[in-house]
Image (cartoon, rainbow, N blue to C red; front, side, top):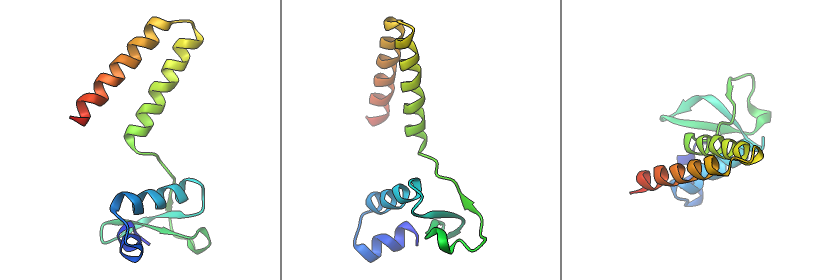
Length: 101
């Protein structure tokens, strides 16, 4: 099923349908196939992959970037570099505020 098919079936918005599929993929309850249908990614029960190529779960770019930044801040704090941690937090907030405007 694609996000479009799920959205139509359950009357969901894109974000909700896509989020449900991504979360189920993340925990291994669904597999995402390499193939697409109508330019959308296809998700199936792992028992029905049937030898087709699958794609691993990957969080979106913003989520990966935020995780990387949080690791850097944690490293700064573990090394008692409060000043650098604060700079990273300030810069991150400025960047995300610029993107949301």
